[in-house]
Length: 480
Image 1 (cartoon, one colour):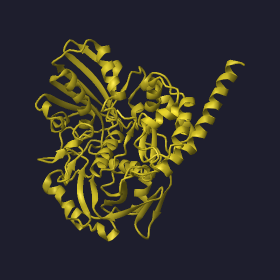
Image 2 (cartoon, helix red, strand yellow; image 1 turned 90 degrees about the horizontal axis):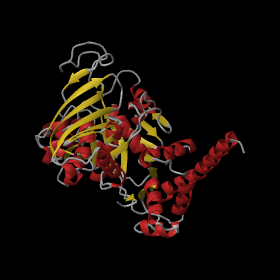
Image 3 (cartoon, helix red, strand yellow; image 1 turned 45 degrees about the vertical axis):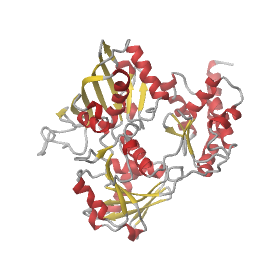
Image 4 (spheres, one colour; image 1 turned 120 degrees about the horizontal axis):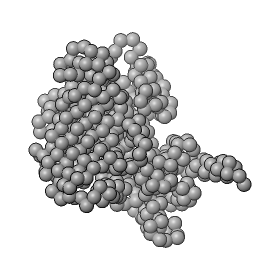
């Protein structure tokens, strides 16, 4: 057989295996509330090509492509266990099976998934009504994620969005912005508009569109919404007095702000301090995208090496807060054209780390440079450590291991490709991705370069906080 025929036949065989995997993934999802994925890349409702790309993506973590010839038998075996609700990472589960040295896959799965074997879809949390107050960049990405999770083990149920009514075909335009995105691509599914009832139906999720100028105008119970978690994406109100307006709305019970909170409002970075949330916390903040990118990496470094002090420089994509062309802006330099300039500006993200990680209070300074890219940013952590890493390689081995098996593996990812650029991280669900090749170690000084999708990665972190608030987090396997 020629090399040409060999490679083509191998591809056809792998494509066939991916096609065979699709109905089994769907069955696990719909009948058992089991979400399958590969290092954060969900496999539910994906094409055969997307599934193969996810297997290929695994090489960025494991340094070799994940063989679909190994995951197909794994998925087949999972469908025979009548599982309860769970989130299963096929790459990690496959690695654990191979490292166990055993040969009986079914026996391994019976032991590893003992808590959910035979539970027949049980364990899905009671639905928690969610309202998105504001429908901009973060609001629409949250909607995409919530709609994608609607029939899974996650108990979050998107019921409504609240916006100020615009001129013209407001509802159709809102739906169109959800359907099409210049950065993140088309919506994965079907979107319809119910003009008569002011609603958007996305993949069967009925989303009521409510028009209001401020939170106190809204009565959610009039739409059958009760005990709702209101996610404020506007950033207009960031203190207790302003955010408390949401609690005056009938049917609202808690508020989560997708911006740094002021005063005594807890700024939550999932994976670091989400355990600080209590039932009495009615107003919470999910901090900022940059704080979410910095804090998990900073925690790993501080817990292992100790941070004496440091500086964080953020190279951040421009946002809607800036002007496209030069015009008046209340902020310094932000009035200059975002599409034409690098704009030096301030950021409170470094200091905000201390709200989630108090032991770093006063130890980090920070600045930001806004650059002419629409999404994906980079945080450069220049840290002076109490304990010096043995070498760059030693530090990278530590960070890579934590990204694979550590308690912050959902927040901290790792890559050491010499060819990646910012657009390669669009859609990353990690809070931050350490670029290992860029790591610098000089005695007690360590400089880390951390990529982050400041839109989607942050939105994924917000959803994790929401799931924790609603106590609807699916159990993740394999257990760490």
